[in-house]
Length: 297
Image (cartoon, rainbow, N blue to C red; front, side, top):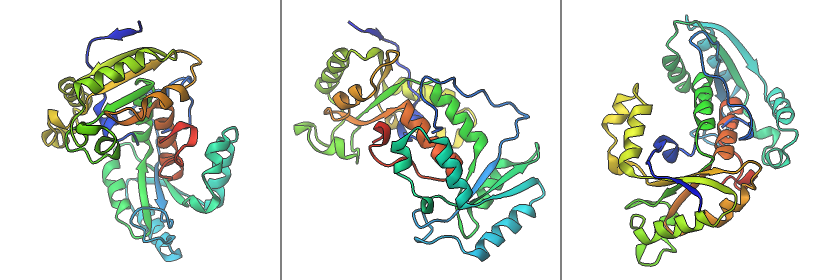
């Protein structure tokens, strides 16, 4: 029998954003913690046809100049550098040279050009990012300090997470293929079957079941500076989950194949995919890997 920990702990934010990922294998050293004096950039990615709310168009030359003027005219900004689409693509090809599946999913025209912005230590980074996001021609502005913190948190989490169906979930896996349980919260029978399946996977070293109450408690503890979000979030908003630790050198595809489509599982998330997604988002302005890339859904 596998080593099962009975305490219930969950990083519920990740359940809601199977989010937001650096291109680092799970076995790699986790990123260092952010220090107050670290000089992280804010990346301001310009519009591409695939970017949200860009109306299927690239940023115009005038929009690019306007964004540059705005950034250089912001008092807290100490440096602005432009990264062309060609330069971004060259960096992307170099970083992922050994990962053919990642390379195959991205073309040069998919990458946005960007401005990389450094700010003073007293700057309100959130305000600068929010203002940049409102400029015409901007697809998204990303604070890489926040992304680095996210990568650190992901690296410290479980290898794989199975989030379970909640009542009134709109996710397809919860609406169909479950018989009388369709559109309902995960049932006791489904949870029992999932646990039994986990027990039978040799690649899984240990796992934990996490309930909604503990998910909410850990969500609150992990986000002390987000009181507005906490105030509108209830225990019932948190998903139940199973959190898995895999054995060293395990084949990550095996647990995915066995568990992802089981009745009662709403979505399956893993560390490798989350890190990849965050890296593509924060460094290259891409929404994430193509479905099926290195096991990503």
